[in-house]
Image (cartoon, rainbow, N blue to C red; front, side, top):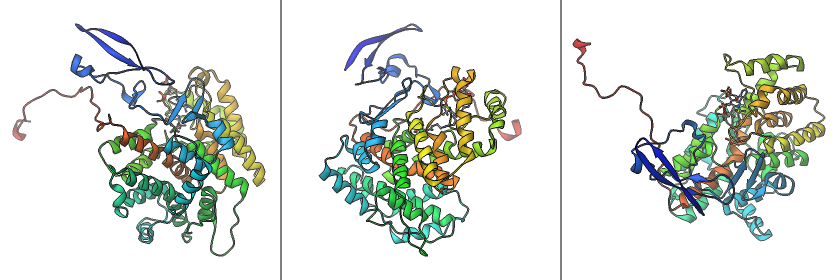
Length: 428
Ligand code: SDX
């Protein structure tokens, strides 16, 4: 669908820019011919007003606080679906029939083991290495084991690589944790659900029987659903940019993991829990809120604010309910949860946060749930990367299959020193 062109005049120029309209959301101005017509670039550091691609996977309405995977509202998927079904939906665009779902789950389940030699990778890391450092290294190295599924122009091999990535990421994540605590790696169990298998690989030990707690299994699956995809966020854009050069899918996912690690992005859940611990008690909240508002203080309230959401992050709302359920199920009376609830209330009534439309985001409550479930803080972003792998791989496939896609290569506004002649050392 298209609309009347936008007339751009000025600087002695007058150009008509085509306007494109999607199925929902803001229209876009097609500037693909702008440089040829005007000898000028657009300028948008951080891409706050730039659409990088056409996509059919995830839609966010930041003003309304809405998130949909392939058109299905996240609240409905959270209540009625499960992560395996969401992976299928993100990859193939439709909810699976029972037969399709059963085959997908069987295929994923039977690809959860990693090459035995991959175990040796871990011994090269220090035991206290951050698990995200291990994830970047080990996921990137998968390309060394699966040469067949690096043939990105073969649709079958792309799907094999996609299944392998979704299937093996929990195994690698659990191995990163086990290595850090000096416990033996736990092999996958094909009789468990995706979330249940992950919990067992994380928390079981050879010395005793491990029984998956169904409440925690459901909470884990829900956390995976909520983190699965989120349109063109920083790490997804990283995966797409890496993939645009023809890099293999394992390298692209490793690049996405590296980007997600940052505290402004996926690292915020770890940073948020550390912040709540630093605040410690409800009476210290005003001190931190004042720091967050102080222009001369780089401190920010981690877990608040979002580039797109200028309303509640719908994932945070679901996560908040889950936090109550998990803490109740485990009989955990975590003072950090009280601090989080009080901080949320204070921040939402503070004119600074109201004016800047800073609401709790997906990272605000996730850390409290994960801590209660027994995950160390350093594992929080690993869990985010585990879940986001399905979204990354779906977006990567969409990019590769897009006939208009080409290597991503932004331009710049150069403000450095114009051309000058070399000055020999004796003349300087
Ligand atoms: C994720 O993009 C995605 O979809 C990401 C994600 C996903 O699923 O992939 O949703 C996951 O990354 C969630 C966000 C997690 N990050 C945090 O919680 C870190 C804290 N939040 C901020 O760093 C910030 O809000 C960002 C990075 C999330 C968004 O930053 P923007 O869009 O670049 O906004 P900005 O930094 O320009 O802030 C706008 C204003 C600024 O004040 P002014 O310069 O206008 O005076 O709001 C202020 C900021 O100083 N501000 C905050 C704040 N966040 C923004 N002030 C205090 N505390 C905060 N958390």
